[in-house]
Length: 459
Image (tube, rainbow, N blue to C red; front, side, top):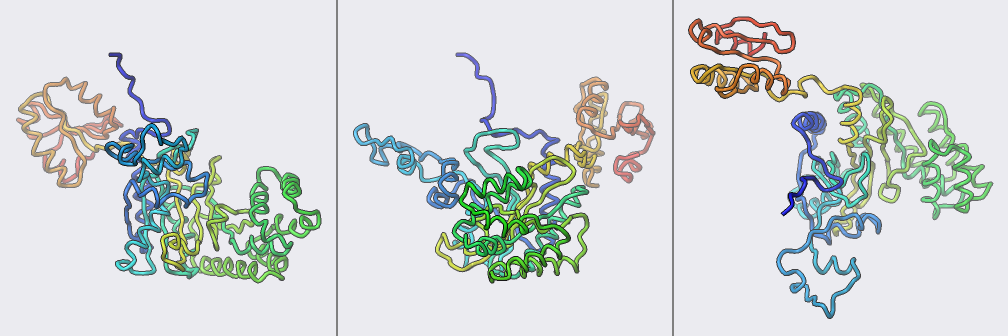
């Protein structure tokens, strides 16, 4: 039998120890900020009922759901035989699959809220950091298995939540070392207002899909696309000043209010944006640039109020975060009228940005701080209580088993980027003075066990 070359499914990845330390550094930083703002962590199962997920992401999204084949003789259980088997894959999947891998964290969260509504204190502030799966075509930067870092608050319509999400983005990304990034904000009500002033409320998606491409195809390209989608020259003249908004956020809002004077919905959107800006004005941002971007329309059908997107200005990269306010998230599961707002961090893209900018701290390249090397079994016995004493001091330490040449032990330390080693031989045991070596500088000193433990294994 021919041997099978080991590999992982397309669109999935292995993560090395170094990558895991760095990924956990990102996750832990984001989690600590979430907790600081009162968000509590939950987890939902890897798999959900297929009926929970289906119909929540649109027809195209439904095609990307990974379905799980039922256990046992699923064909017989479903009453299927050669005479009645259907070739309609959509119908067949429901006959032989009742579960699926979660597509995102939002729908399972909505299910969680409805299922546990009598146990939850509202407003409910939760965060989740878990993998999701999508049967998408794998390509650079797009995987079939990837992590999402979500935070949502449901049961509150206060715009204080939107303002705090701006602060969460600012604090988390600043802490991770990013030095130039923009948090873009818009409001669905403003976009609706723009459509209303040209009597195209029913064509809001066509309008926003086109203006969302302004930075890619320019004004002429946007106008051409709008004309192709049925907008008149008069319509375009009315909305052109809105598309080309310039100036400070305050100046943009002033221009918008004039343009949307006849749209109550649009003016309400302006009021909401201004309220968020007022909160932020009293809480100085660390790094982030907060920018009103009228062309921002991510997930238009999904959001009902504020819309967020975060972009780094240091590296050519897509958005590294986004979110917004949604009404009636839980309505799909029978709990009506529960408004919410949420954001997500793009952990994989943040990783790529940090790697390109060399932002990971030096300690994230190592998993062990100190290695004890010994020449023989006596040295091993002598070193064992020392290693335990160091671990009790919070030092990540290893004892290399006896019977291997010292060079190989030192190569091991270099291979794992271990910064310090202790060398124990018969001479060190007799004198009580152990050799402590800095592997980066080559400096070494003789120290007592007590000195080494007090200094936590460092020079």
